[in-house]
Amino acid sequence: MSGWKRVARGVLGLGVTFATAGFFLFAILTAAAAALGRLEEEDPFFGIAAGTVWGFAIGVTFSAVLAATGSRFVFEKLSISRVAIMGALGGFLLAILLISGTKLAGNEFTGVTEALIFLPLLGAIAGSTSLVIARKADEPSS
Image (cartoon, rainbow, N blue to C red; front, top):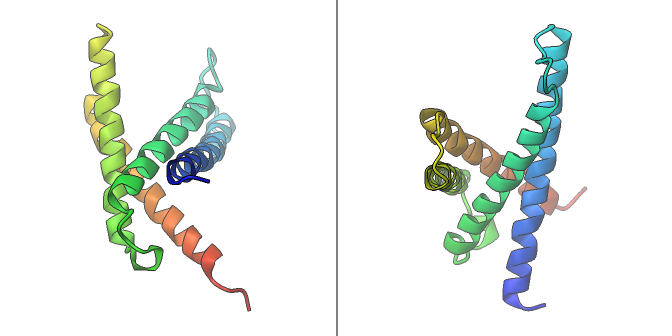
């Protein structure tokens, strides 16, 4: 398999992994909201769908940033802080893409501050977590 196909497969694979994590995270949050009686009546499953889509988008942008900037590093030498910075950069780029895409479409984007804070934060957390999980999977089992 050629190099760019491996990178594309990795980018999409991490996107699907993050989408799955987003699905389960927001399913738990939706179940908690339902248990507390705070579930929105008009569209109760919007959060789950949005979490899945955002998880995929964050995973793809993080993986693309990692592929572009981290390709010169050996897997064992990647530090959690470096991967967290790359994840935050991926979340920031996603926020900028979302804000500019909404503005170009002629609509007003009301969550600028939230997008610029939470998407990089989620990207950093997700990136660090994925590195820890990948290191655990790479360890020989005893």
